[in-house]
Amino acid sequence: MTKHTSTTEPAWVRFSLITLALTFMFLFLVLPLATVFAEALRKGFGAYFEALQEPDAWSAIRLTFITALIAVPLNLVFAVPGIVLATVFVTFPFIARELIPLMQAQGSDEEQAAIVLGATGWQTFWHVTLPNIKWGLIYGVILCNARAMGEFGAVSVVSGHIRGQTNTVPLHVEILYNEYQSAAAFAVASLLALLAVVTLVIKSVVAWRHEKAMKAVSDLPPERPADPLRSSIA
Image (cartoon, rainbow, N blue to C red):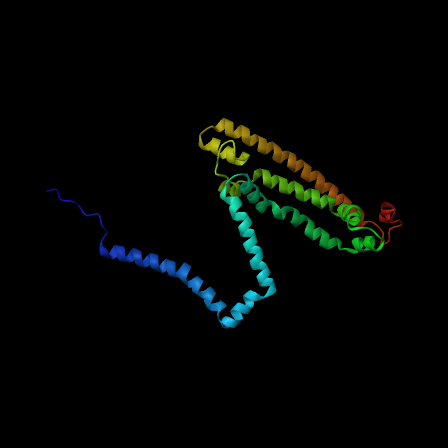
């Protein structure tokens, strides 16, 4: 009879590995989870349910569930909706990051003055708000567009890498490079490089115009000699 050699580890090795795995799970899974619930219930179940029923908390919970109900079905297809959602997610802060500080610094005095003079909401936005933020808006759009064209990580997760259907330019470059088609990969990548150069030039021009416009505004006297809003509304 053929004698089979045992490949089973010694008992102490198995015991050590099991102990290490259980310790890891306790420290990084069970203990943090227990801490969360212990702190949540530290003041009793009454305070726990009261915190959940608080209007702001309930609004956040409701928004979370609504977002999940919309996002999850769209992401199940790993196709165009998922790619668009992923790109929107990673590019959303760019425009907001440019506009929010600018609008906070400018304040709302001019908008309030326009409303007092009889302007509608659309007239106020078109003749007052938009001219004041146009360079910041254009600057944010340029940055957003550059990130959208070059986004790789988030799009790679949801795209499925289906050629001719769900591959963006960065993903196509990766596939070509992994297939050792270096010439084709660099050819497609050169398009991104060209777009990056064009974006950089436009960004520099817009930044220069924005700084020039801000300097012109800072050089204005405290009271303007004429009110362009009144004539535009009229």
